[in-house]
Image 1 (tube, rainbow, N blue to C red):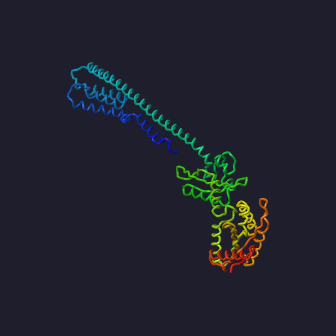
Image 2: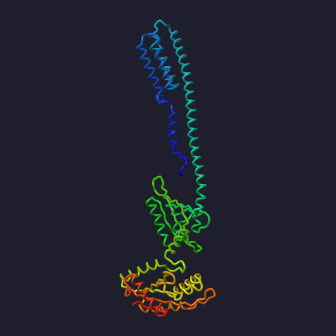
Image 3: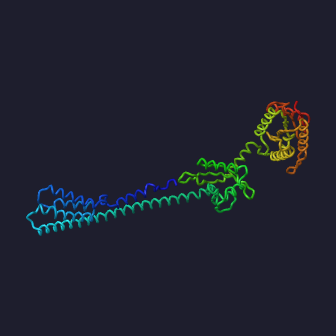
Amino acid sequence: MSGAPSIEHVDRANVDRTLSIERREPRAARYGYAIAIAAVLCALAARAALPPGLPFITFYPAVILTAYFCGLGPALVCTILSGVAVWYAVLPSNLPATGASSAAIALILFGIVVGINLILIERMRRASDANAALAQSTRRLMVELQRETSLRMANEQLAEKTLLLDPALQAADAGTWRYCVRTGRAQLSEQMARHHGFGDQPIEIDVERDWRPRIHPDDAERTLRDLGAAIAGRTKVVTDFRVLLPDGRVRWITGLGQVETDAAGAVTAVVGLSLDITARKEAEAKIAHMACHDPLTGLANRTLFHDRLDAEIARVRRHGATFALFCLDIDRFKAVNDTHGHSVGDALLRIVAARLQAVIRTEDMLARIGGDEFVIIQTEAEQPESASALAERLIGTVEQPIELEGHTLSVSLSVGIALAPADGHDPLSLYNSADRALYRAKAQGRNTFRFAG
């Protein structure tokens, strides 16, 4: 995890290799006995080049150096060979006047001196080896201590971050998941299982058999396609989908995942988070609805009406179709507001809107564009007969008495109708034609309808 101490700098292989090198004998020890023989030959050759006297002068350094570089065994061989060489090759020529007993005593003294030196050298070597072993053990302990300390610090920081992460996931209502590419199964955390209606415990599911049926049909294929693209491209996956819960509710989930690969670079799994974004989606839908709908009646507002009107005009131009545009106005609505107050007037508008909505077809559009003004777009009907019939039904439903807060209210409806494209080839001219027809209806007694033209 980010911020955790790294132990990569503790290279165990390098340390062990270094320590193993330190434990090896010197390279010369591999060839110790050959070196011992060579040292004796060199000493013998060097002694032959010197004047008579001091028969052991070249053999003594050969033995000592062999002991130092090659160890006790080769040194003993070097000593014995040196004694033999001195006895047979040096003493007879260097000490002609000396008897055999004197030569033997000299040889014994050489052996004693050399032996004492070999003992001292061996003890020094053992002490040096002991010191090297102690230093090696110390270094190994330091490496292990450093490694264990790094691991402990990493585990402590991991535990600390886990303690911080768990409350954060709970606060965000986030779940975790892991999808195995090879098996096609997914492990869901407690939160993730709850998001999908699988209960309150972690669970492992088969994605095709268990997960797909819980997802909205419009989202399942796309979500799996996003997952497959992330696996193929070794990239992150971010996707939104709807979960159909067993109780009939719909929950919006956003999934975020990252692929995992093995040492060979093949994708093995995808791990990630799931977030419940239902509240956000509902808020977005509510905002979008408010932007296009009247807050009092729930009908389409002026913005949505103009979008639909533009679309119908474009359809007329492309296909030569026709449609009718109605402008509606509630007669004597101002008197209701002035007499009974705005709360009663608002309630009246809601009732009239509901009555109008009940009369029109689902393919038609009813909108409130302000005050007591409504508009209707009637499509795919024989004109002007269909427009006349609809206008009569609209007038008839509105003029029915309305019981409201202990009062019986009677209002009527005036309607102006324009037909496209006969009464206008563009939205503005068509609307103006319907609006003029509305004012003629109001001027000619209200509670009636008039066509433009």
